[in-house]
Structure formats: C-alpha cells, structure tokens
Image (cartoon, rainbow, N blue to C red):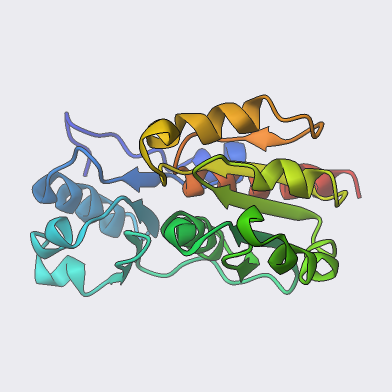
Length: 222
C-alpha cells in the first residue's frame, strides 16, 4: 500500500547498503501507522527514529506489538532487525551522561542494520583521566563515533590520540552559550584534528549510517 503522503523506497538497501528508516518527528500516529501497514504488507522491517512514547501510544495494538521500542533513544525496530555480524568494529563514546540518548540512537541504528558496537559512556574532557584509562581499548576500534555537547572538545582530543576514523556528533546539551549544539557543531567543523567526519546536531542515526558506509566501502577493497 502506497499513499499520497508517502512512497516506500524498497530498493534503497540495494543502492546504498542502508534500508529506509522512518523519521517520526512531524508525523502523526496515524501517518506512522499507515507507513507501518505498508511495510508489513511488503513483509519488510524498518527502523523508527524520534518515536516518542506519546506517538507510540497512538499506534494500533497490532502494530505496536511488533515494535521493539527504546524510550531513551526514542527508536523502534518494526519487525525483525538484520542479523548481527560477528565483528565489533565500531565504538560509540559519549562525553557525558546527558549525551547518552544520542549515543544510544547511534547504537540502536547500528544494531538494526546488523552491526555490533561498543558503548563507552561519560569520558568527557572535564575529567581527562577517564578518557586516558580507556584509550587503549578505544584505539582497537577502526571507527569511533564521538558524541559530545557543550564545548564539543572530545572529538578533537580523541582525533589527536588514535588513528581510527572519527565521526563527531555534536549534541544540544549545554547552557546558553552552547546555543543548542551550534557551539559543539562549530567546534567539530573547525577542529585542528585532521579528517574528522561531522554530522548534524543530535544525529546519532546519521553517525551510525556514516560508519556503515565506511565499513561497506572498506569491504569492497578486500
């Protein structure tokens, strides 16, 4: 079932290596339900992001029972995610506990697409010893997603310490001058650590997709 309001992109995985996902922000529960009914008719699975408990409550019981919902990251797996790979190539680091929701969105996205990851929380630069005591562990991962708000310094610091691919995720955490994440975003974009990839504010989903694209590109060269 397609609709004037939406058109499923069922060939996206073949083109890009990433299935279509549903961004639930700005959609009503009825619109989300219509999309899920269409996905179910095609016997597909889909990732839901920015799915709030209120919107989930408005979805029919039949559909809701098929959603693996996480209230911290506001993500849902509709039907079964991809089988998990054997390798764990991606670390996800959050600077502080307040950044955990965005870090978990990245982790849940990776899980849905079949990639294992290692979450490491609360190692921001305010207590640099916390980073240093985990540095040897972090350096073992070829890809590191770094989630940080306020001054957004952690991606730059880590970029000067390991040779992993660094994907910076600025978050909207912080007081007034943090400007809802713009300060952290600008810090990541202007970083003096070369080669850091930067995604949009609070975009854990986008960071996970960037990591998957890196892995997919690397596998073609083997």
